[in-house]
Amino acid sequence: MEGLIAVLVILAVVVVGLLIIAALLFGGLRTSLMFTVHTQENVIVERFGKFRRVAKPGLNFKMPFIDTLTRPISLRIQQLEVNIESKTKDNVFVTVPVAVQYVIKDEQVVDAYYRLSNPEAQIRSYVFDTVRSALSGLELDAAFESKDDIARSVENTLSARMQEFGFNIVNTLVQDISPDARVRDSMNSINAAQRDRVAAQSLAEADKIKRVTQAEAEAESKRLQGEGVAAQRKAIAMGIAEQYEMLKKVGIENSAEQLLLMTQYFDTMQDVARNGRSNVLFLPSNPGSVGSMGEEIRNAMLEANAAQDADHFGDELEAAHNRRAAAQRRRQAEQQQQADQARRDAEKQAAEARRRAEQQDAPTHAADGVPLPPWAHPDAGN
Image 1: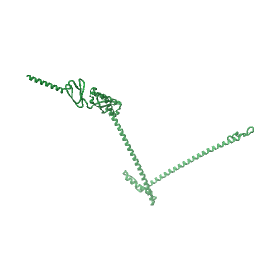
Image 2: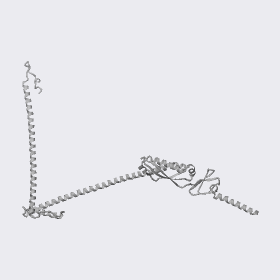
Image 3: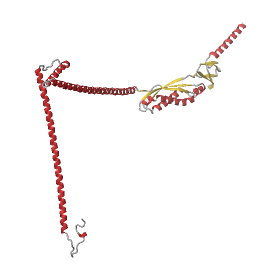
């Protein structure tokens, strides 16, 4: 009986020892003796609330019930996204999403854990302050162009301040600058209107070039056409002259004009019949009518020559009349000039006669009969 009791006591002691060992090995953070830390993580060991050491990745030991562990501190690059609503210089409210990438180094784990109570909130405060200060001095268009400058400004400010607390800023990204939907629609309308204006100007310039080129082509065509018509008329005139001379040589001198007119008339009828657009054309076709037409043409030519001669004769009469009027004006001017010259000569002769008469009446001796000296005569100065 006593042996059974001893065995039970021994078993109870073993069970209690195993339970104690299991509690030390696999119990909670306070009761456990060992703990593990994952890669790219650190854990701070505190003893009675006071910093003891930093536990590195792997298997670590601590004093049960005495040492406590903090939450794991990640050493990976972390990203904090901040949405900022601010106003630009031209009073446009925009939303700027900013992504801040930061990392905690091994030697800065203690500062990163103990110096800041809420690191993410404090990083947001710095980002808000920097972005709003940058946007307040920029207009909307300049803000879009200065997005990289804003990102660098945020990064420089955060790097200088957060490094003191154990946080190293890796990169700062300004992802977008989003104005209000109505502002975006207005900007799109302005851009569309500008593009429409540029397109209209381009179309107008193209149409201008087309019209100018077409006008130049038409002018060149008309010039060449005029030269061709002039050359054609010259050739026709030379041909008619040669034909007239040939008819005179063969003895057909009196009726040569009628023959040429008849030939030209039939050539004209043939050309009208070939190239004319009308279906019906009434023209005299018998030789008598052709002869009367030639007579009318000849009479018209004679009347034109007579009118030209009359105009020429009238011009000659007018020129002769103008010449006679000019000659008469010249004669009148010469006569007036001669009359003026005669009047001046008469006045001069009258003045000379008065001077001589005064010389004759002047005394030549003094009162006592002594002759006067030459300087005493009235004409001594002359």
